[in-house]
Amino acid sequence: MAIALALALAQVLLPGIAADRIGSRVRRYGSVQSVSVTAWPAVKLLWGDADSVKVRARNLSLSPRQAAGLVWEGRGAGSIDMTTAHVQLGSLRLSGASLRKRGSALTARASASAADVSAALPAGVSVALLRSEARSVEVRASGGLFGLSASLVAVAGAQEGRLVARPLGLLLGGFQLTLFSDAHVYVEGIGASSLNFPGEAPGYRLQMSARLR
Image (cartoon, rainbow, N blue to C red; front, side, top):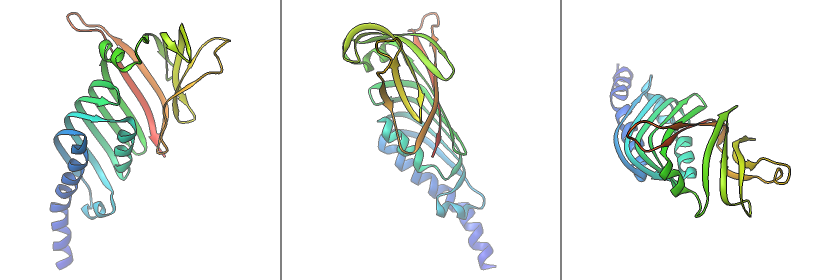
């Protein structure tokens, strides 16, 4: 009887305690609206496991490495759904961002205005989206790139779990720049599409697929 009562109390209390703990971790990076946690039986939360976690935030500001670390902290959850109205991810400001975790698979989506993309680039550098296919993005970049002042076509995509960019062409084919790399997040691909709605600033819809390792 005592064991059954303890388990019942755990089922009632532990999800709320876990939600408070997750909320406090996310609040290190901004404003959180709500957090909910489900787990059956709830006692597995004591070992860092959960069935699902849902987080809604207003504004967050963190580096790509901090974002990867936050996802890694939730590795024991079977599913995670996290959304935020706005997020400053390193130098890039994003809106309507979402992160979805199912098992070890991760999918992140967000929108960025053309102005925010320009602000995130080094001074004198500009990019224009050409196409996105095969889990990679092809852009035309102009300015000081790869140690040269030029206009060239570059491709960003996954390579051995890292997100890298490399210029196309015989002369610069050996150059590449690592954009993101983390020991716990294996990047599988990225995508981008143009957003141009009447009366709204032009921008891009961005997506990245990855998995925890």
